[in-house]
Length: 238
Image 1: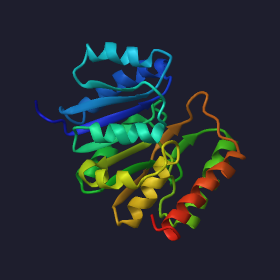
Image 2: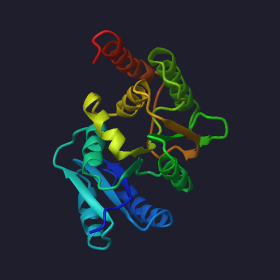
Image 3: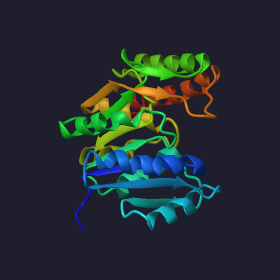
Image 4: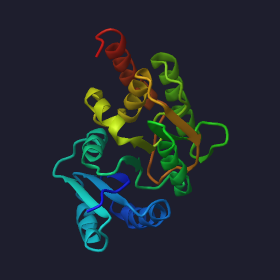
């Protein structure tokens, strides 16, 4: 069996209805980029029939693979596991609600083909077209401001769920990442920059998914993770 060039990962937790759109859309868009690809659904202990839906889809398409966990591990742990299981030399992931316009997937992949170690969509660059509540926008900008100024990142958006990697280069970085949930994206990008990885950040069209809420007070919880990583990098030297 020929190894795929691209592995697309969709992290899932109780997202049965969103998968009905995400899987066929993924197959359609990826087929315009390469003939050799796989889609791994990293299903993290769902109880809503998500795993069963993907298993059924596996019988329809050889491109679709289920990576199931009986218990919830956390988004970061699920992504770590899926990246290690990926057979593609280029690995990407995106949110199951397809909040980022899938027309950007070709640029995400091409950035890695052209030599970037990491490619990431950004909702905060000039040229980005986003729609979300004012409160969520303020929370996101505040969070990313803290990451840039405390952790020394040069990027504008660390939490966008639309990223790609050169697998051979990203695998050695995974053991150092301690976050097992939402902070995983930020920690990976910060540690990668400190090691000199090339990161391509580009503007995207993005629409907030239904039921997604981030409040101003959530920034304080985010801040504790930022400070913990600063301590690991500058004091404990982990």
